[in-house]
Length: 455
Image (cartoon, rainbow, N blue to C red; front, side):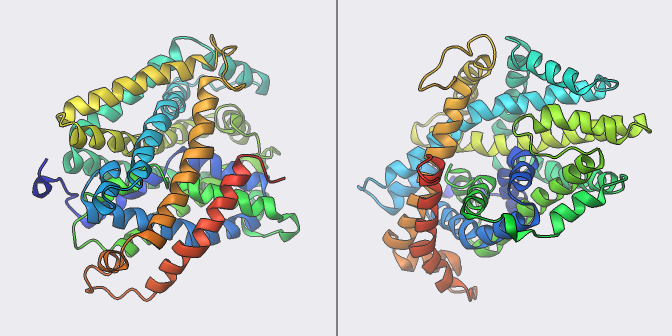
């Protein structure tokens, strides 16, 4: 593809919604409330917000400027900016990370479709807590049903990717992100109106700093990093489709605001509902698929129709959030194959979809029929999660901050952040300082902690 022929997003709102869609996913609606529940509630949220500002946004701006200046997929971007150097492996690692994450993330994304159907057909009604546990274990261990939903979810993602940047990614982001907002607002309104919900609201708004220790700071930094989808090439790839008039700093702040806003609103859905029935939402991976269906049935026990509507809307919300993220991860690998190997966009997308289905099937089976087959004590699903989330993403983010802060020509950084001097960016020097000193140290600490060396 010639440089001048490269696709672009068609509007500024499309840029923001697509980039926000990349960041917004299951991490916001499941992982954020879980981390908040385990780390002191409002105090954790305040620290998390600080981490977004001091760590997440500067790294995001780095990915944006690398992608837009190079006008290339995330692998080639580093070859353009640092030709003939080992920096090219940072981009290639981002492509691989995105591909591997998509493979196992699609397994969980497929589960959301199963639960949408369960909710729509009213199969949650009348179940006890042990029955929800049994139902989930039976489903996740089934050799066929999870794979069916995995394939269906990947085919839906594939359809949007094949449509292209403006007619696919941008068009559907403009539909899905507002839909996601509307559903969240309705669910928040229902949840906070439940009897006893004020305890959950207090937990979210009243900081208890007595529970704050170094582990809480590390968890907040890790969540900020995970939530913004940094280090996997998504934002860098999307930025390569930005127009030259896109304000990178403003876009990063908009994406960070939307991502954080949705995560906190998810807390306002889950905490008030859980507290209203006396359940602490710290159930880990089972929170979304075991605890919450039970919470919804108990919370609206006097109004079955509300329990039904709440459940349906919540799992539709999960599916939409998952889809906005799978699209961005698919695009990273698709753009790489399309541009580096000369495949048509359709062929590149088919290779990515087929490869993710193949690996995804192994990840899905590791929850059931092949759960006894392990490597380093982990099944395929857990191994993919560990290698990507605890090694590749933190390492990628660290290298991005070092590359921008220490290696990249400051004239390029200034040109991209200020749009060739046409924008006034008062925090320019602060961004550079963070990228050079604060971000590398902070991410190194997260990285070491994630590997279990800090206790």
